[in-house]
Image (cartoon, rainbow, N blue to C red; front, side, top):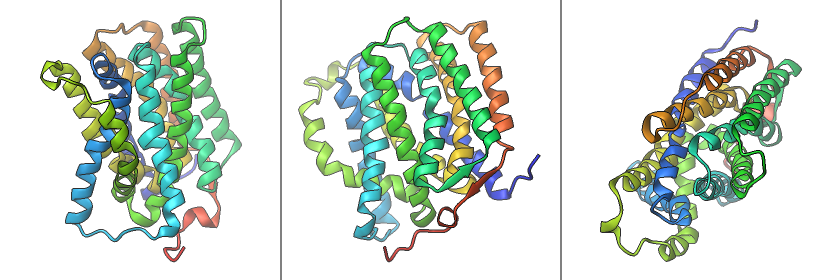
Length: 305
């Protein structure tokens, strides 16, 4: 049993807060796409969040990141500003939020793999065993709950998982230098010129006719899923490590299913609770395994480029 540093413990607290916010993303998306175009839902939330981000950056007089970091910020944009939101919105047209939740249960494994690639982390063999076991439980749950065939929604969700894992890992690396909330704010501002004309083409013709539920769902995605949630999430990944804190996402499918039951009336079964217990055990055991890091992953990025 390895001792836990204060940074790791703090990272887990921040990480859990981020996951708690993100767990409502699919139910909110499901409600929003019942009225709005999926492209508007997936990309429009970034435009709203970018307005908040710009105000915060200007008010706190944040220095503009050096141009040499542009490729890194573009990775964050591609992963969490465009990739995951758009693909998950497309998937939620045809799949229940609870079903999407179990597919996105592969996010911890995706995040850990990207952490090895982008953040220089080196998880131990026991870590991979627990991560693999937790992911396997999620996959089995998906097979038991799914339609038995591969659909566009499944492919979109798998693409969303890969995009998010990459964006999470790259954002965590940048957060060590620029700060957690600064990374998502600069990424949103960077993406706006490209996204604005696309979102404009998909604006609903009659906003007054939009249901309050769809409007609230879109606002939640804009203010929380696309903005405030990343403040806690990137801080948690930066403090506790991408791979280790990323395992908290194994809880996200079941938090999402619970939210889907409460807000959308989707069923909560004994099977779901059983798999949830197994996943929680994997998170607890994986939390205490060894993860080493290269010197580059331990230090801040050199701002001189």
